[in-house]
Image (cartoon, rainbow over all chains, first blue to last red; front, side, top):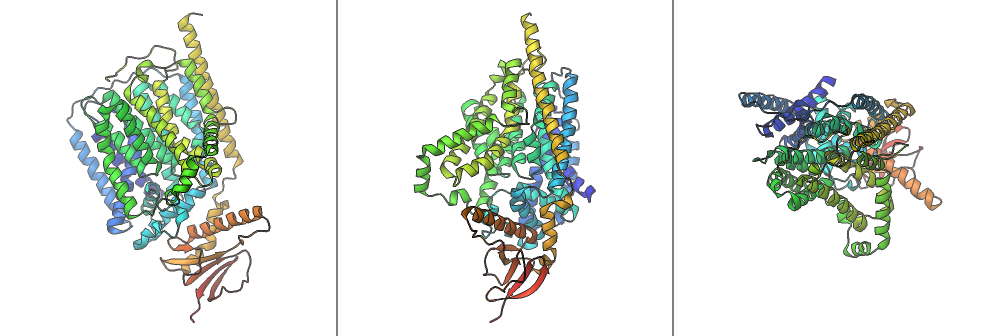
Length: 460
Length: 146
């Protein structure tokens, strides 16, 4: 059973890694750790889409397992043949020797985070409230439902948010079909893939783009964010969503660095943003915000981004039209109530105050919180002007600001019980953005060795 | 101290600060590990799944079943009422999670009705007859043929 679950992970990573290798321009050799980190999420997204399409066509069943494994094998073989004989590609990593203290620190925090993650899952193997009343309930409907799997979207269960996208429950159900039965190791594996995949992606992308030391530092800070590890074990979809937000930024950064004459990395960024749309509704806002940032600062990347995002946007709209009842926030909106909310200064004040409090205390570990640590860090190491001036950095910063503004607008205009909703969801919304924000931060922060910046490879 | 020397010192202090944060986080995470019992068998959701196992086997493979459960939503004071409503809702959600893919609705409209009570015996709901008592306050009713 464990071997079959491991196979489910291997198959999706293989699909994703091959897709990343195929997408990467020939002249850019991405090393395997980065390819696998990107492939883990992209593969999970592809597997979820394939399984959902399979359910529509044939209904849920183990036939999918055989079909997907054959597909992964065939794609890998084809990729090996295709890649053979290609010109050797340059790797221009500025690989300064990382400080030993960072390596040791990362390993120690990784050990603590791994132990906390495993213990959290043993403590509540079904995850927390939203996981079992929403995501894993849908997974059970898919796995147990047979021809009636569409009951997962029953309007008789409005509290289960039947309009929510289904990447996470689809992956959980897929893991059970691989295992042959329901096991709590399935959702645990999905959660671990995204939690530690996010750390790996952050570290390997920063290592590639800014040096190994910066990569280790990124991994250290993210693993050391207690809420990130704890929330990973709740089996909610916020950490997977954060992975896709981060992967979008990584795609844009790779495009800025190596995308001369090609739209492939921008297309990868668009695909990752598209996968965020099939993970949670917030992904739609994020994708629009990134597109807005690119319109303002990096139009060169916009075409590739849109090409990658568009198919998934159409799929999302199609899903909403066919499967999803109306969103509960929207369905209860009325013009009078919305206008009343919009003109209520108290709601703005309360939302602003909670934003300030939650941001200031984000990542608290009992001794300090992250914003203060990172501000002090930036004062110590300084900012890399070359990185700060890159258009994608500005586009990314604008996208993050737009997403936060969008959430602010939703809180002010739509929320019924504003205080309760702010208390229960604001930290999670910040967590979704955290890996991408940390990536952006460490892309523009200078390296902690006090030495001059390596030569810039900027082409924009 | 020269300018480059000061820059290096500042950078080292900055790095030390991040490492300090990470060390505190590692300690926090390990404290959480120690604090938890760490036994899956103790978790409420798995126990609930086991409680509903036999009832689930009696239900059809799909469709809707009704649901009646404790606690009563109206409490003595408003705060009791909110707490009771929350517990009632949680028990209903857990019943749905355990009984999926059957859709469980808080209604007596379907022909099959799940009773999830703190104590039994209970009077049969009007128009229903008891099919089986699974123990522990878990009952299955069927609409009585008129």
